[in-house]
Length: 104
Image (cartoon, rainbow, N blue to C red):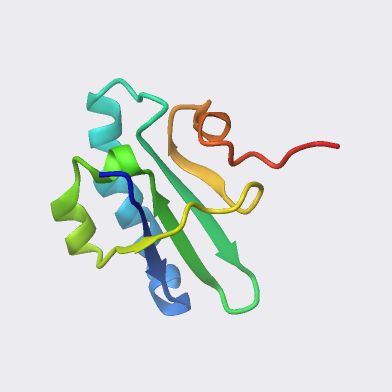
């Protein structure tokens, strides 16, 4: 599996703490595998409407199909560099996936 997945969290769901539910569900899987760079969750907050998008790396998605279904995750494109922050995973995951904003 090489697809990225996105879990969209509405403003109301965000207020109710759904982002933390997603993070709490995936983090044990990341940690039990000793947090490899390939297993990561990223998030992007949209200040215009208060929504959050959580992105699941392809490698993490490959072992969490039931969680993806539970959170109604949809296949998506890889997030753009500089558009996301690390939600859960190895501290070097942003660099590994080339998602850190590049400095000029």
